[in-house]
Length: 335
Image: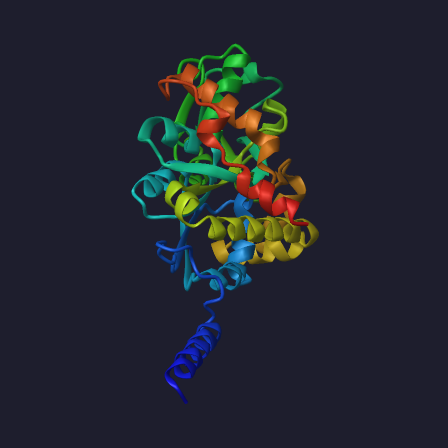
């Protein structure tokens, strides 16, 4: 074998080794391979799409060709600590409420964008059984627990109260807390009601500690709730990975729509809840799983205006500040 033949043979052997090792999608020149993807989420049916993709192994399987060796997820009680973790660079993508994302971009210079929709509506105002309700005016003088300031639930509740002539923290006392603490508070009678995402309203009702009086879709029809957010680093340096993240997200969204009972079983096992309660929650909520970010652009931008009026952020943000729909547009055009 001459020298040239030896070089060619060596090249062939190296190429074969690369295929055996699964290195079938090399990063562009000068770009480091992403070996771990870190996902943030919350224990809500709003984010069941992530749990389905994670527990069925789709994240790992679909991202492996791009060099991702490990996919991990981390649970957060609400959006504020989840966004703090993203600001600190501790997670790469987040299933999170649109409102805390808006606040993080405005106040913490979070370098990230919404790359897909996740879900709309799906939260309930729940009052204790003995508390009468026929209109928002009946809330005057009551104490309502909801997620902390800047979250979807806090933003929606305060805006809805103002629209109905009630001053938050004056006419209605609002206490910020996570879902577990809020369920405990209404169960113990320490608050008159809660405004929480599902499955919490069904869990409270199933225990006989409250009933839904208003769903969030009645407060703000078709409002955006949870979104899929990717870090700026991921968007700029690993666009092929982001493309696949969106593909897997769409796949899991459609799967959940077609197999809601299986999705409920996966969710119940992951967060440690009774599967029948979760199935009941899905039959009662007014939420809808989505993936198209375009249908929620106006709603998300409106949260920015509401948060500005509430004094949470210094200036309203724009669609360009909050969204990068190019990945969804590219992936959805493939089919």
